[in-house]
Length: 288
Image 1 (spheres, rainbow, N blue to C red):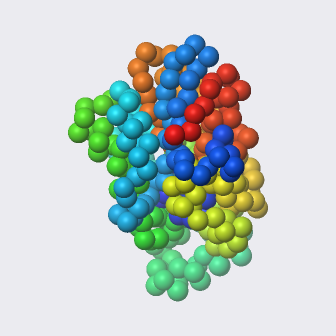
Image 2: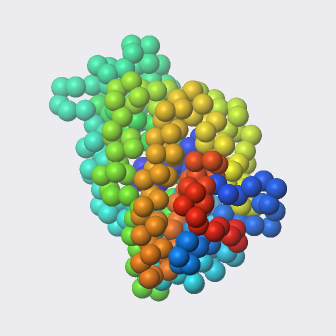
């Protein structure tokens, strides 16, 4: 989840978004109860980061997991994320005297210039931003008819505040921002170019429908397909983070508190998903 976007259909298939087998998905949701080898349980919830009012109510297991939990963990602390907008903006801008033109192929720059000209955006308005930051702006959920305020995290955060439940993050703010801010010029340019490349395979998955019926494998597969032309970034935004989260999730299970861990639904599907990694550590997974 990132503040200026939730990756619309491309990245939710959000930024969007294991063990959720196609054969058992019917009647289930993207909510699981995970029990550690020592018998300690936590709840895991797959999120769509940006939704519409028409997508509510959430499937019932989200409320059941919320009620059964004393604490919530999101991908990153939401309060810290809101306060970091200026940090993200600073990370996404070139220094004085520098420009996008100096960091991308001339053909890329010409294409981007002509694209923004069609939108009547003057060159000086976009040229001081880095490619990955331009991609985030172009993939802003509000440009695609959905709202991050109505995403699963937004809904559960409001409930947690109303009920006085503690909230935390799987990643530090630096780790979260570095998924994009840590890209080199070539990687950053590739992310921007992917914004303009149709992803026919990714479009085949109805993201919200797959999420609502608990088909996290389809969501993870759609995310991988979206990054087919840049698999290293798909690994960076999905697989690497999944592995990094496992020690935190282990600590939540061992804490004596019951946590509800909520992250993009695609993080839970597939052979490198959070559920598969937890199973490798001896967790018993029950889909709700």
